[in-house]
Image (cartoon, rainbow, N blue to C red):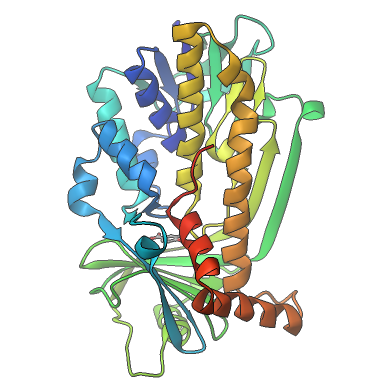
Length: 393
Ligand code: DHB
């Protein structure tokens, strides 16, 4: 098979890229090691920055989001039994975020890509990226996981294949620098059939640490508590989960968290990671292949789509105007914004979690950071500006 752009991965980065390239008249194909079902069912965070909401509408895939998503114009921070409303819309000149889960975005993307006749090959195995330092790069893969080899010949290869995929590894080790921070805590996330307890997301640091109250619909709520990343889920009975959530989200004024049946629970580790550069020859990497953020602030999906927006513009410049400046600048352009996303996710994570490896001094500093958001309009403005999505420069 021959296309202009071969995309390894059909997660948010790979699929948004295919749609953006299609709009520019550039041909692409996605291959994906997971099944369609796995791609569409993987539960992740659910906050979309304002520009991403606009992009979904521009691409004609905003319909379900408009009806099922929830627009939020603020968030609540909580510590010491007190809540503080951060008026994000007021602090950013009217910008807002959309709470709409990532797996729903993926369903919209897959449906739109297939409807426009795009090809997504799910369930492939043995993917090998080769020749990216020549003018004739290619991707080899086995369509059904095993069986005979198939090849995509293309002008450019995009590794949008997640943290564990072959994309990043195709950049020679000697040319690549990786930065990483692993946090000594994880998140236990639940989905519960319960009514909404509070009109906006609550990020709390109270009791034994972090908790997050989020929503999915009027009937289904998403909540997280900080836990040991090595904990087995079996150690967390429903009673223990509700006990921790009540302790970390409780207030002094008699408010009560609405409990319900827990129908999904899982534990994720937290890490920060950046790979530099994000390009080698005719290979470009995007999304989790290039960078990971801890989930506090929900930047992962937003950063992934930002990469491919930059990349689609650069490829369009190349194909339509024979101008390679965008492609040459891809890595530097993305990394400037990515590092700010890394900084914000690290800031939210360190400020809001209890870290046993830190001293009491550092713990006090985190509460001072929280109180600064309450007392300083500049600090609150900075948090709000980052939360709704930084500009692209
Ligand atoms: C959700 C997840 C996050 O990491 C976050 O910061 C906000 C919301 C969620 O799953 O709803």
